[in-house]
Length: 231
Image (cartoon, one colour):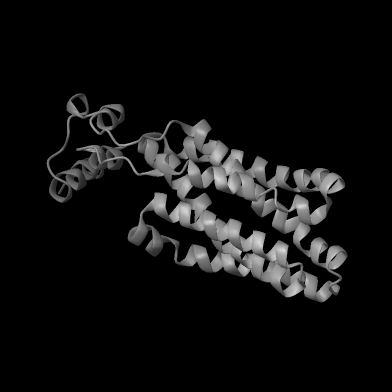
């Protein structure tokens, strides 16, 4: 009967192939160099993408109901539907996000979601009607729902040996965007009005969509799966 400390090597052997000597194991950088597809350029870049994505989430959380009540004259109860629509659409999008990723790939998914968010919110603001604004914030939630998870996933796949620290750094950038979104809308609304200020999240979402190419997952490195299990 094998001793407990021998179990990881047995898992790495029969299931995933023979045990891999760490000295012979290909490095993550070598796996990236062997492929000429666009590569992720670092956690700082991914943190910027997360920042741009969560600016919209912060804006919707704190200003959607205020816009409907103060600018469009909706009742307080109806104004609350704006953020409710945003949250429900985001939840629904994340429930089907894995299937959409498998069908479309992360790059096309992020670009498509960016278009949904920008066109939906822009149309809702231009219509200048409460029901259209609710629908616009719902589109914003649906569009943003799959972008941040793809950015976090790319951070983890960049180096599976240190996935935790990479995801933590990227998530910190996203949190800063969530907080900054509220401040940004408040500052711009004094100059362009609240309706004009709420178009500000469209810009970073468009930037994230345009720069989505590095989210393409890296190729698998031979022996990496067994090494991660042994670690």
